[in-house]
Image 1 (cartoon, rainbow, N blue to C red):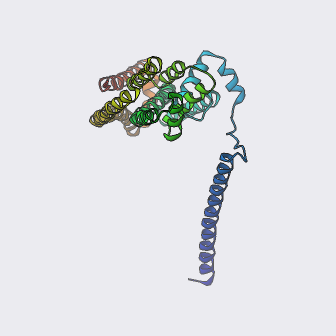
Image 2 (spheres, helix red, strand yellow):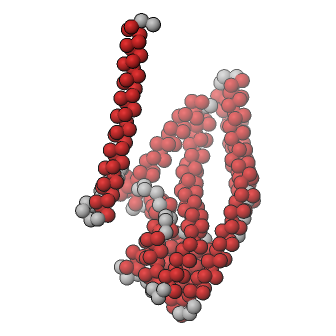
Image 3 (spheres, rainbow, N blue to C red):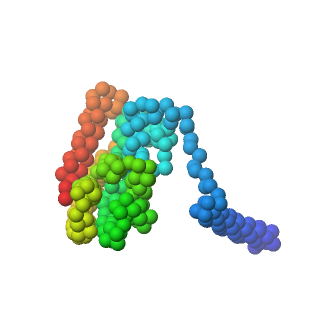
Length: 312
């Protein structure tokens, strides 16, 4: 090697090392800054600013509509840091990208079908987030009942016990109970606050817990023993739900793999002869066949999920 080559390699390695050190120093500084801001906000020395919201005009218009209110209710239940306007704009952008990408890879008609499926997927994503948050809350119910039982046994009122549980438990239970505690702090009744909680996170376990708390608050009685018995029952149901979910995991994967195999067959056909999908969707009979096939795949996906839905 010549001296110029060695010099070039040495300068390149030095530049890479400097870049790595610079990135490390920058990330460490940002982490220390964020920790300092959070510590100052907790002590009241600094009000931590919230995230800047985008598409405020779109959000204001959508909130006045029935669809916007429904989307807002779902987003609030999921706990996502999104506004209605941001969600709708992001969904429209994703649908356009999906249409052009699928249309360029397969055929324009398939791009239209992909956009329709993507529109369904946007709503399914919110429903999945709601279900995920509900499942997370259900898994925390045994710990929640244990905290409430210990607090009430110590002589604390039920409202105080709920506020204490909101501080001790992690999300999503901590955040949801904080909403209940805030509603109770402004004078709302216990029945209404817990009723809203059941509407946000509908489940049998939570309904039983809320009913127990409301009846004990109205008529009095041995709430501690009721909560301890409920804790044991919820622990058993939690283990049963985990076992059922493990047994049905393979079937749920099959429900996803069947449409993926259909997509793979389309790619195989298009790779065998370029333009085959364009020719197929260029005729009316081909479009009808594609729509029927997509409907059958969707029906199979729906039926498999329906059959594997076990109520415990």
